[in-house]
Length: 242
Ligand code: ADP
Ligand code: ADP
Image 1 (cartoon, helix red, strand yellow):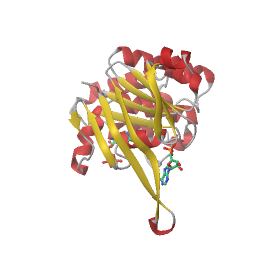
Image 2: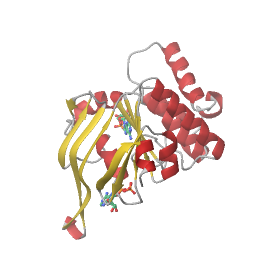
Image 3: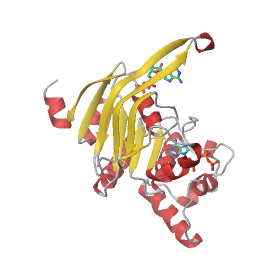
């Protein structure tokens, strides 16, 4: 069973005055992400990539089709089930302060990280786990845990979000343009981290507008054009037959 499977999902946004119009942002999109696999979702700006990521994270509704995680139908979830859902599925979006990211301006970094971690675990073990997660994204706990988000650089915030997501040992990570804000050396660190996590069995949906990045990290690519999947397959095949 795939970690994630989308079967003919649709997204329709209400637009215009009083929501009088409709914008079909995603049309009948089907894709799968398996454990230990990076699938890149590639397309120009406005093609519906982020919308797919947001549907998977239940940050927007899915308006048609079926979404499954680990074989279970999760197309519609009651609010009370979301907490459990987020143990399996985590996401990081490009702009650290986007309302789609769980970073809270009023909370110190320590509290942001603590809030996201709910399984029962001894305090000392939890501190070790946080230190490990931060180390994996080359952040030093003593440099950031006591600060407020606005005191960190964009790159630090981006890496913090990745670390926070990984603390839950999710099965699926949605990474939406997460390295665009990073400097070159941090980019390499984060990409290498993704590859390492993949080898440990994490499924990754890697959203990017950058063909060369998709080519570099992914096992398979899915190309979106105006809300439709126009091409998908193994990375090598797709890029060899343009
Ligand atoms: P991408 O991630 O590929 O740039 P998006 O998923 O952000 O594309 O957007 C797909 C389409 O949906 C675009 O036309 C965008 O303007 C529209 N869209 C995105 N979010 C909303 C929203 N909240 N309300 C209305 N339209 C939206
Ligand atoms: P709380 O219930 O602690 O006030 P929220 O309602 O903001 O927190 O979010 C509940 C949980 O949902 C958080 O612990 C967080 O892990 C998860 N969550 C929220 N947004 C996202 C996201 N973009 N990606 C992954 N998990 C998220």
